[in-house]
Image 1: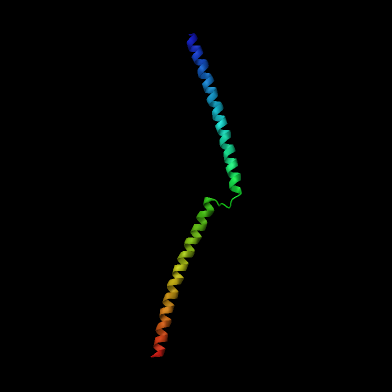
Image 2 (image 1 turned 180 degrees about the horizontal axis):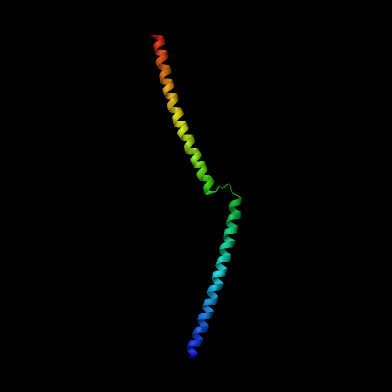
Length: 88
């Protein structure tokens, strides 16, 4: 029975140490997060949500630009045709 008592004591000490390490890990994670957030605050970074909004706006602008380029091409062709008719 004495060996079981010693074994129980060892298990308790290991379990206590693991709990302590778990707490330290949690604290370390929080400190690292704080340091990283502070460091990122000095840079010009945006959130994922804001980036997605900007990408959507850019996509829409590209579509509008493509449509306008097509209209300009059509109008230029019609203008050339009209000028050619005038010369004849």
